[in-house]
Amino acid sequence: MSASATDHPVLDLKEAGRDGAVAPDGVLLPDYDRDGLHAGIVHFGVGGFHRAHQAMYLDRLLRDPDTYAEASRWAICGVGVMPPDLRMRDALRDQHGLYTLVEKSPDGEQRVIVVGSIVDFRYAPDDPEAVIEKIADAGTRIVSLTVTEGGYNIHNVTGEFDPKNPKITAEVEAIGRGEAPTSVFGLVCEALRRRRDRGTGPLTIMSCDNIQGNGETAKGSFGGFARLLDAATGDDLAAWIDAEIPFPNSMVDRITPATTPDDIEALEREHHVRDAWPVVCEDFDQWVLEDHFVDGRPPYEKVGVQVVDDVMPYELMKLRLLNAGHQALGYFGYLSGHRYVNDAATDQPLATFVRAYMDEEATPTLRPVDEDLDAYKDTLLARFANSHVRDTVQRLCLEGSDRIPKFLLPVVREQLAEGGHGEVRRSAAVVASWARYCEGVDEQGEPIEINDRIADTLREYAGRQDEDELAFLRNSDLFGDLVDDERFTAPYLETLRSLKSVGAKETVRSLV
Ligand SMILES: NC(=O)c1ccc[n+]([C@@H]2O[C@H](COP(=O)([O-])OP(=O)(O)OC[C@H]3O[C@@H](n4cnc5c(N)ncnc54)[C@H](O)[C@@H]3O)[C@@H](O)[C@H]2O)c1
Ligand SMILES: O=P(O)(O)OC[C@@H](O)[C@@H](O)[C@H](O)[C@H](O)CO
Image (cartoon, rainbow, N blue to C red; front, top):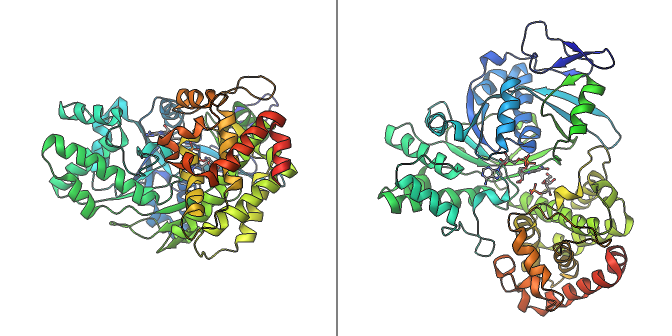
């Protein structure tokens, strides 16, 4: 323990594992034997969300003496493959895998938990061979993923693994030359090859990303990558993966903004915990998981996870209401001058617009689901309005090229398909708000920072819309042939013109 500026003893998580470490008031330390944990899960993409969700559920299981023994074989070894993961490596290594989760309710209540379920972290470029061997080890029985929607190399229009992506083909060629794999696909495929050849047997690959059919998508991506490898090496790994590896689908939910320097300071000031990289999230959590595992799984159902046979209706509900709802709030919110999600969500015309999108356009495309949808939507708007979580509009506007096609355009396509109601006025308006945002200058003439892996392309298409109003929609990699459908382009143009002439606030008012 050291002292803070207020002379209150501070628990530094670097020291938390030592004998005599005392939890500050109101802070829950792991009260279980961490030396008895074995990593049975290798997780790629240890960011905010994994630490607020999957690792938290496992921590809950470990805290319960009735489930500790079973859960203790399922601790987590995190893996990062991207340069920003170096910071996570250092933070977790210094803190023995410990980090703080601060759960904030709409009324300002805070729950502060030091999570102990991550026991190891590897930054793959440091030692790819060690990562491969960790996955190939018989003690590893699940590989899980939160590598973002863009991490699956899915073509936006075909919805399939894109074998022509130059990064993918370059890695396959490099592996063919005997170089070490670098991506999640390369590392996992090599480990699976070793498991097959050594008779270790299969494991389960569990995606926890926000993608419709995330399990199916992961199966397509690993299978697609293995087929490219097979073509280069003459192996038949893809067939083994297809036959042996289960890829459960899941719906995952917990709003988790990126950690800010303020969050780190507030944790030390208010709760007397020094943590290099805590996580702040809302108090809500939900996980609906398909029970499709080859070599066991943690007893998640004992800590509130809904383990079901068919996840799809839950996924559609969440992606089309919450995530697409976030997109509806994000671009209009930014252009209206809001920088925090709670401010956008309490801007009444905008909230009414988002609710109308949910009711009139998304809800009719959902499948029957065992949830009270009206209550679910009410709760969503209340969650968006949680002012303590400090979720940023900028986070919602990240990587639109991964999100709009996966969250919103499926609603549009279903509405316009035979049997659909054809109701796309609000969805088209959201796409128009994105097109306006991608022009890169806000209504006050200030630059907008577009954080997207294809930001240049987006700016280029949006930059042409003064001469050609439909220019943005002509990016067929994102929109397919929507530009040719007047049922979509008419409301799209109406909103785009309105955004340019009267601005976002007036446009939203005219839409509700
Ligand atoms: N943040 C949330 O509210 C939330 C809620 C539900 C689901 N999710 C899912 O979790 C994902 C991650 O969210 P987060 O908030 O943890 O983000 P984050 O930025 O904190 O972490 C993302 C992690 O993914 C890794 N990653 C990114 N691209 C990758 C790639 N191509 N290959 C391998 N690793 C890659 C990053 O290195 C990082 O470790 C989201 O994209 C979403 O699918 C997030
Ligand atoms: O993180 P993404 O890219 O899937 O989407 C952005 C947000 O909609 C998302 O993070 C939500 O906050 C989350 O899905 C809530 O569970």
